[in-house]
Length: 337
Ligand SMILES: NC(=O)c1ccc[n+]([C@@H]2O[C@H](COP(=O)([O-])OP(=O)(O)OC[C@H]3O[C@@H](n4cnc5c(N)ncnc54)[C@H](OP(=O)(O)O)[C@@H]3O)[C@@H](O)[C@H]2O)c1
Image (cartoon, rainbow, N blue to C red; front, side, top):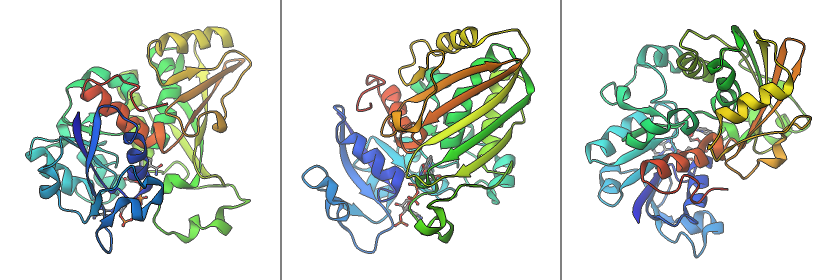
């Protein structure tokens, strides 16, 4: 049994981590912290946890938390995690950071997040926590950079074809649609009910901060620089991401042949499901689960890939727990559906 803490416990991602851990056989939640007005039982802040998580949620104090945990999840905003992660690492604790703070090289981070990276000592040792690509490194990692939600759906949808060298690496178009929880719990007029309901809008067209993250990982897979076109959209639902990806085939392949490539690439990977020919994934089939469902359609030399995840599960908390399972020698699927 390992002792686990969550900082940012009151955020969407932190709360979701706790919901998963409640049913995890190898974990005891010992510490919860968040920016709160007064310290109180976590189950009084979120009554859903009554009788399950009756411990006090405290104000942030990483040194105090480190005394009572083996591993910590940081469900914190970007630019905050890199203040706390080094403290836990100094105490010899395992860290899984859900923010973007350890996902990019420092020069790229500065361009996209606007500030100098504050923990350049630990950054090179951080492992990108996408188990389908980096399982062996995750197993040995002390610090996990848990992937972003859009990147998870995009990278898993594209990696098999880049790895197989069967597409034009200079022509990758990702059109993603996300539910509103993807932006977190903090108030924002643009995310209020009447702004989002009965609406669909593109935003940060080809300049979303997840673009350099997708480019970085796909470049590693392709072993050449990749620069995708990426358009995210906000749609009126709580959770879920559906990415429609357009690729150009450089080999003559039909839908069945491409499906076989994907099935082979993800063989033995418990959380990626490839749809059979003629079927496409949809949000309602993955919401609340840690699955990435992928559907394939070939039309002439165009390959259309539809990749679906729950942004709070495979896109955040579920993937974070999957990483913990691998790091701590639990079954990869423990606590997850
Ligand atoms: N939402 C998603 O779908 C998703 C997906 C992938 C990755 N992520 C990433 O996961 C992280 C958390 O996202 P989220 O959606 O859970 O955000 P959120 O709902 O806004 O929650 C952020 C949490 O961090 C706490 N916090 C803020 N500043 C803090 C500080 N200085 N010290 C300690 N705690 C602090 C907040 O407390 P207060 O609310 O009291 O301020 C809250 O508990 C972000 O980096 C996000 O980009 C989110």
